[in-house]
Length: 157
Image 1 (cartoon, rainbow, N blue to C red):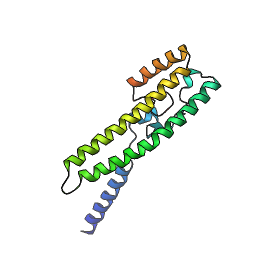
Image 2 (image 1 turned 60 degrees about the horizontal axis):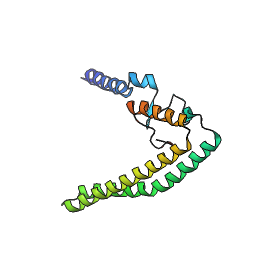
Image 3 (image 1 turned 180 degrees about the vertical axis):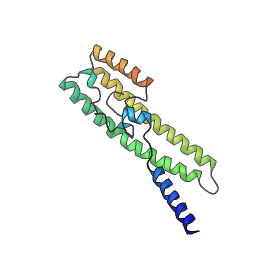
Image 4 (image 1 turned 120 degrees about the horizontal axis):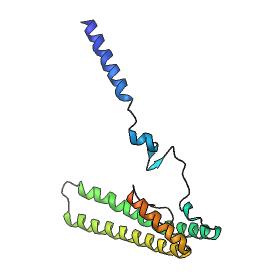
């Protein structure tokens, strides 16, 4: 009986050790380990590096991007509060459907406001580029949209 128990415990322990060693998937091997969409094994290149911006353009884009983020941050904070409030409304013992719908409308308004600020920023940034740079940006943007996403939060998305 003791032998069977000892074998059983050993098998459970071995099984636990093997399960703890998760294999790396093939896509992870190709592109490196992903953390929040960024690869740990690939060097990060500067956004818009492919446009060969001059120093004045870089400075103007940096300044405008900072201003855009300063405008967007309070709206994102308010959106986060509205989303948290939505979870509270949805998990209430007796949910108020009117309050839920009103909060959904508010979240939509905040998302639209963020999109408008970002669109204005993109249009302002495009005015700083030469025709050739705009063409390169448009071509690169098209390629990125076919892949895994755009240049969210990076300069001229």
